[in-house]
Length: 578
Ligand code: AGP
Image (cartoon, rainbow, N blue to C red; front, side, top):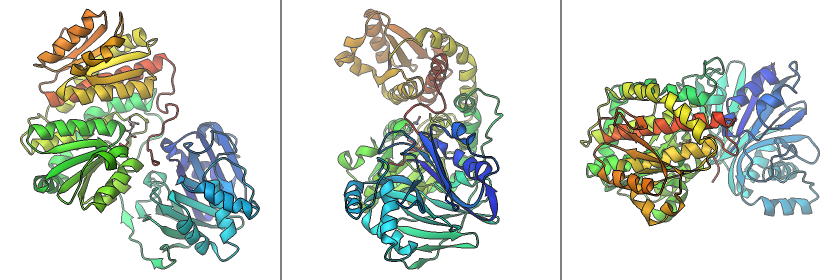
């Protein structure tokens, strides 16, 4: 994972106020450690979040070229030594890397035999030494060509040589973009890094190299042949960094849901109507529709399957990381990726696999111009705006709305007009209750959430929120499956949430089975006397609103527990490694 940013400029820029301020925008990609290197050869690294590190960086420090990195640890512990940038033996070449060099042990052994000394436990350091070694035979371009040839795995790499105001870049699978700004260029893992400075970007394709200085840029393919690149103009809503009036981004984003929902519905009915038509056409022509996603997006996809199957569209879904193993795709399959970031490596890999098998590719994404969007023939945008908190809230809701909207074209009933207001009412009527219940549950470590049919994916997402934000071991499961084993864990006082859409008589029985064993049942239903009452007139709406309760509860339990809500431990918002 990790985020990388590099800047080359004709004028000196402040490292703290410019380079690190841009890196902060990529902190959602990882926040284990941080570091930068300037073309003067100054390197600083630190463990933990950028806000702790930045105060150590002199405000007056300037550079004309610099690279930086925010890390989500994969190989090697969270230590200052393992923080990027890494350098060659002489301290004259620095690299930052996002991705995983799969054959790093083999490369490292070979380089050690040639006398290279390694100082970290990371896979990334091998890049610096490999470039150093290959530079003995030629220039940086050919050294990067060697990297592309010799390294297995994924990488977006920025390299800087001491004394040169120039950045070298190469990428495979991990995302990398070049922003064309006034007076210079900004390289970043995605457009967030420079969306406030320019609306013009060049996206790297796999196995491409770029050489960038203040005057211009050149792209080359793996064989060193120049490549003409398209400049893309992008539109992206900027996110204010502070002053949003909420204690955390998570609660801000929960409250943004009515607006985000309305924006998406309007857009699907107007500016995105053509794309909706195209996607629906592709769905009609396909023999089967397979949705692919990870984490929260998978639960939204699961709801999509429910909606579509009800309308006799043959639909399946599978967690992206197991896609190749458990799903059959061929030329007659339409694969729809569902992804907030559009950069999740598991999803990208699944799409590559599907493409190879001849399947058609479409997507529902939040971040425009992301890798997934660029791989897709047609792509709907979620229009949720930037989501900063690691936990998905408003993007989940909008993913489900997008699914409902597609299903409605096949006859699934949903009232889109009233949905934003219903979300608003749900939050208003239940936030106080969630706060109160959070006080009661803050000491509990095992919680169950049961749902059947349309409520089952919501039960899973409800549990997912409790796990990642409140660190509660929560299991979201099929209500009917409880009695086949898990019921053994229910004892006096065990909290069990029951998602009870109107008319679901079987969940009523499952709930009673829990109650009979002394479980502490918390009912979420449309009945006004339930623990959490939601104004859902149909199943699709119920599925969304019941998750909103889970979001509120996870937030307030985490708050009670004093947890780092927007940046939970060990996680990152965009997971760009397998
Ligand atoms: C959501 O709360 C999680 N942070 C995580 O499960 C996320 O949904 C998953 O990593 C998929 O991300 P994507 O939607 O950007 O592909």
